[in-house]
Structure formats: structure tokens, C-alpha cells
Length: 259
Length: 215
Image (tube, rainbow over the protein chains, first blue to last red):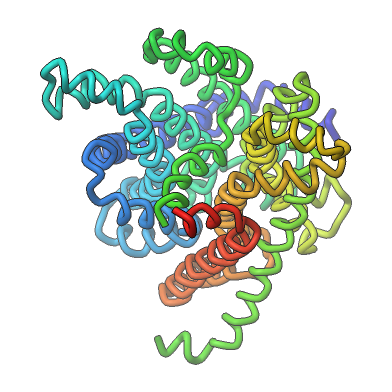
């Protein structure tokens, strides 16, 4: 069985042409990265604002929880019927997929952003105010840099979910690595489906590794150096995917205390 | 809404099936994740291995897992056991890290006190460490519950009946109402799962409220 999968993956004809692996990989990456960027553009400013002001926190925590519960497949079909007729060409299919992936990526990024800002050491914030910084300056020079590790881990966990879920683009007939799953299912071609799954996992891990490197370069050394135990923990686990569980559990702990 | 009234019985039986397919793996997954999480704490060398290993499982797209499991474990394609196994794998993937981190958050002083009082390792785990780790484990379980309810619906693509079948039926007949009913039912189901876990956590953590009464 493993031999068949290996044979499928190493077959030269599967690596070229319109439905070849490189093209499907690029399509998959394009869907995922575009959706993640849109989600980040919405979720990071909103999360920073909520974390900084504490306003709308209750509403957003609950909205985020409800958004996680929306089944991606159902949302995809709803969006297809609602958006499809209003748009033309490829966009009629791309927009529903994009919407599903953006809705999927917003919760982890948003909770990472507000939990990150909320978790900033109050002394650091006080010190910044004592030095004469105003609200927006405190946010930009103190809270944002201190919140970066959690923001990045929110982005990484959102990216993992988006890459795994972007396979449903193929359900609407679009491209991406999901094609190998759907076509493999239709043709009862097990090696093709398994190869598709392996390619998705490899893509997810590679992107996560790249984001881990980004995280290392953007997070201030003052942060990683000061908490030396945190730094060694990162050194052990930094290159692997952050468990999606850790992010929400961190962000859902505050409600336990207040209510 | 007339569609829902006419098909209420059908929606109800799909909901029951959905609860079964999403709920049972939650319990099985927790039972498997507890010893694995304990191992990851007990033997530090195992921590990265277990966390990376279970993290890898989570990158497998659910659709792929649903399609591949019959071949891997020798079941029939339409057998719901495939979905149960797949969902259990995802639950374990989410919970091992949570359990390990929850156990790690138990203060050393508490563990040492328990040992000094004569608790052997096994009993200390069951009656001291595990109860104190409940709030963290519960937070992870809530995430797993909500994501299970959502992922199970994908199994409609391989023909296993549950609320997701309303999506595929509605899609193939270009009929929006079943899809809306399915989405709403899924969200409600996730909220109910969440509420049940919150309730169980409340009952399992009386000490969290002990401080409030006196202070």
C-alpha cells in the first residue's frame, strides 16, 4: 500500500501539466495565504483594539466561540448560493471558498491578539505611561511587541487550519490539493487520495516552519531572553505546529475568572 | 420554515446521529489523551515526540482521513466506525498537549505535599493532579467538542448520514433551506456540547468557588 503511494508520488506525469502537483500546490498555497492575510487584516487590529481598551470583549469572545462552531462545509454551500449568482467568472467560486477560510482563520488570530495585549505585564504598561507615552504609543511600542509571540501563535494555528480546510475548494470544482482527494474518492484511487493528504500535511508543516522562523526574527530578544524558561521551551517545540487547543485555552481562561 | 416542519423527524434523527459521531470520540479521545499526556509529563524526552506526533495528525485534512480509514483499518466505506475513529484521532491530537500542559500547571508544592502525606504516584495522579488539571483540560475539551461537531459534517461527502447530509442534499438540489437548517443545528449542537462540558467542569471544580464564599 505504501509502495503504491510512493509510486504515485514519484510518477513523473503527476508532476507536470495543468493538473500536476506543482500547480495544485501553488493554487492551494494561494487560497490559503490570501485568506490568512485577509483574516489577519481584520482580526489583528480588532484584537489589539479590544485588548488595549477592554471594550467589546464579552461580545467578541462569544462571537468568536460561535464562529468556531460554524461548519465549514455548510457555510461553503450557503456562500455558494448567496454569493455565486452575484459574482461572475472564477470569483463566483473563489469568493465562497475565501469566505469560509477567512471565517475559519479569524477566531485563532483574534483571540491570540487580544489575549496577547491583555497579558502584557501591567508594570510595563505603567512604565510606558510614566515615560509620557500616550495610549496609541503604548500600544505600538510596548503592547504590540510584547503581544507578538501570542499573535504569531494565533496566526500559525489559523494557518494550519486553513491549509487543511482549503481542500474543500475542490468540492466546488476549484483547484488546490483537495482535487487529489476528491478525484481519488471519485475514481476509488486510494494512492491518489493518500498522496493528496501527504502533500497537504507537508505543505502545512513547511508553512508552519517558515512562520516559526518569521516569529523568531520578529519577536524581540528582550522578550525571549528575559523569560529564559520560555525561550528553552520554544527551542524544543518552536519548529512544530502549535496545538490549536493551546491558543483558545489561553484566551478562554479569563472568562473563568470573571464569571 | 415549512421545509423544517415537513422534515422535522428526519432532521431529528440526523441530529441524534451527529451527537453520536461527535460525542463518543470526545470521550474516547479524552480517555486516550490522559495517559499520553501523563507520559509526556513524566518522561520529558517523550514530550516533544508526543506533541509533534499528535500535532502532525491534526494537519491531515478530515476528508482525506475519512476516505483513507476504510483502506487502513479494513472497514466498509459507509461504516460510521470510520468517522468515529477519525474523530477520535483529532480529539487525541488536540487533547494530548492540553493534558500535558494542564498536569504541568499543578504546583510542585502541591505534588510534594501529596507525596509527603503518603500518596503513591498512581493515587496522587488520580486524586490530586488530575482534579487540579481539570480547568485546563476542560478548556481544551471545549475546543475539541466544537471542532468535532463541525468536522463530522464533512463526512457527508463520503456518504455517512448526519447533519452534514443536509448540506450535500441541499447543494445537489440547489435548495438553500436544508443547508440553513443544518448550519443552525450544528451551531446549536456545538453550544449544547459546550454547555454540558462547562456544567461538568463546574461540578468537578468546587475549590474554584471556595475562595469566593469567604472573600
